[in-house]
Length: 233
Image (cartoon, rainbow, N blue to C red; front, side, top):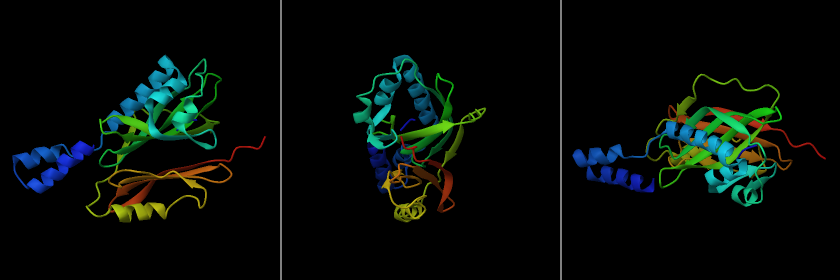
């Protein structure tokens, strides 16, 4: 269904300035995870779909680089500008959010419901812009025979901050763990490389993904899934 540069500069300046009140203040401004803001953005997105129209909301909250699958991969804004809003927008609720340590990238997963009674799940990737707001860069999902059970609260997982110089090694670990060989990759990587979503669309348009977070010095599996190839007409 659905697909801090200034602060970073201050953080680097803090490292260069050494100890002292000025350095401590700058370190407080270092980019950090903010899963509550991600969830708030997801909820605002869902509310906008009901108030302004489904595809209008998708366009409003999409990043310029956003991709979605219909079922072939498409550039979201190009595809969305041709779509008329359905009479009744899909409804959805986030159940889980994963965030990189620096907050530059986050992933939400949750449930959706259509007016025809069908239900399913969604996975959305959120990237933080320079203005601090989040916009989605990848959105996908699928139908389910059994609706997802709503949790009492949105679960949160935050990656641990990697040590300086680990980014290349962490990305290599993640790339070697791709869930499928061949096809088209839609890798989503946080600025600090503490969160990596490797997403593969196979030639038959089946989709495979794995979400990894940095924990205890390595990339661990946090979520994975597959959407079967569409049936031939």
